[in-house]
Structures are given as structure tokens and as C-alpha cells.
Length: 117
Image 1 (cartoon, rainbow, N blue to C red):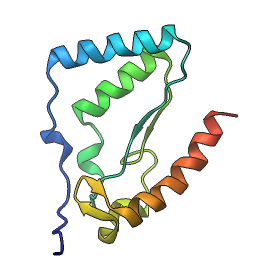
Image 2: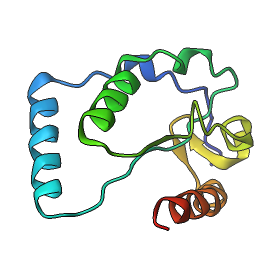
Image 3: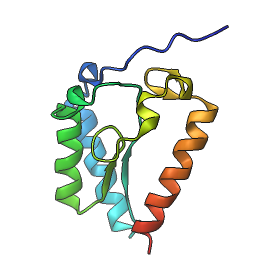
Image 4: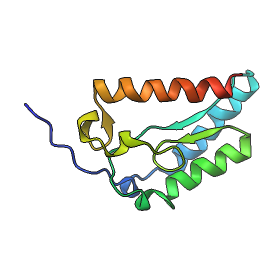
């Protein structure tokens, strides 16, 4: 059965305040344990990047990354690639399939190596 892939609209993503508080507690604990964090927003299927430019959730990630000095790689905005517009790489609009995740992993590997040098 073929999965229909539609564009993904992350503006519909809502996060409750208590989840945000718990997320920051987790970051504090990880930082206390001297574990290096890198935030990654994986690619979603979207032909036009405009809806991603000022999303509240991405703004939140950016602010938390700045607050805690955590690198943040967003593959829907700053690190957008042909993956975002290749329908055959997605199981649905928000999730990569095997071939998409394989291609994305190659990109991610190179980007992570730059942070870990």
C-alpha cells in the first residue's frame, strides 16, 4: 500500500507549558552531567520554506539553545536541502522513510562531525 505524502505544517504543533518546564529540567540535568547536547530538527516534506521561518516552536528551540549554549541545526530552515522537497524520501509529511533517513543520515553525520572536532 502506497502512503500518501502531504506537506507538513508544523504550526499545528503545540507543546504544553509543563512539558517545556520538564524539558529545561532535563537539559539542566544533562548539562550537570557534562554531556554535550546538539538540538536537531529533522527535515519534513515542505515545498515552500516560508511557513517554517517564524514558527513559535522553532523560536522556542532557538531561545533555549541560546540560553544553554547548545548548537541547533534546523533542516527545515537554515540547513534545508533537496530532501525537503523529495516526496519519495517520506513515509508521510513529517517522517522520513528508509531511503530518506539514509540520505539524511549522511548529511547529519557530516554536520555533527563539524561540531565534534
